[in-house]
Image (cartoon, rainbow, N blue to C red; front, side, top):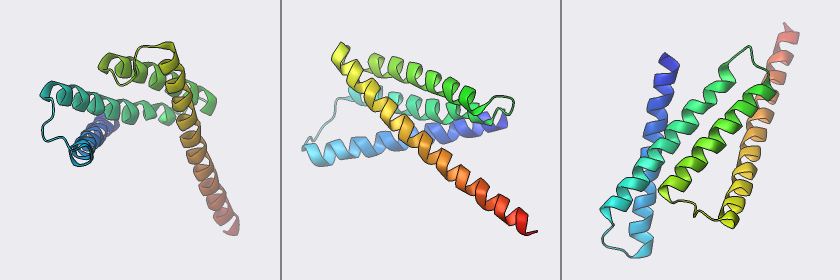
Length: 136
């Protein structure tokens, strides 16, 4: 429970930070002097919810009695379903078949790149630790 609360706070903070950065980018680079308050609130809350979702859903990888394939499948299904519900609900992705297909291809591509990066990193860390243990 302590880990869940810590990850929740980190995710909420990170989502809020992304909302502030994106809002500042819109103001600085679009030439707008005023923002729509309702749209700002909707997007900020969506960004916070998204940060929370991705930080908490990674807890699947800390369940020791699940295999890596099960952890990955559970994480992927949770992330893709909840993200797309959020994105369609907020309006980040238009509700059209082509928009959905493009978004799902991008989501899967980003997911695979991140998953492979973390997998290869931790595999190399395990190899280094095993080599150090062999020296003892």
